[in-house]
Length: 233
Image (cartoon, rainbow, N blue to C red; front, side):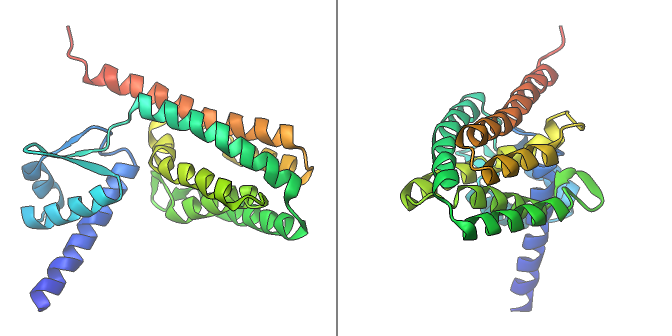
């Protein structure tokens, strides 16, 4: 029993380290996760690695290919572009309704969510390449609060579902985006101000700019990754 518990703890630790390496870009999108290399890197057995990778596959961070093993989920231009278009169409619709229909309690929750986001460190302590998990939670809460004034809860849940699908891409925008000067705080402040001003068009415009900015950074990153992988002539 102790051995099983110890193995489980070790698997959890390796999963956390793999997850951090993927989200920080140290293991790049599309990188093939070979057991001998990983076993040496993390100093664990193949069985522990396999268990950790299966759990990461359930979270969408890695993919399993029959007879070929695991690889980090690729950065798909097509998927990212389609997801961005769907999000902009649906999220701006829900935000317009939220700004129009939200009550005073909605405003209060929005201000509180923004305050938490503003005060939460963006990158993980000791790891500037990785977005802090607490910031990601605060970020999700702020964007949910923005949309939460929408009276049509089915529309709201659809919009939030698309946001969840984009989480890995958002995480990668920090290590792969190559824009350290990006003013994320300013983008979120613009969203807050437009929503509190009850301006549906300004709110939708600010959200569209915010979402497209992240997508453009990642599409540029995909081009750089392709250039790095291309064989030298």
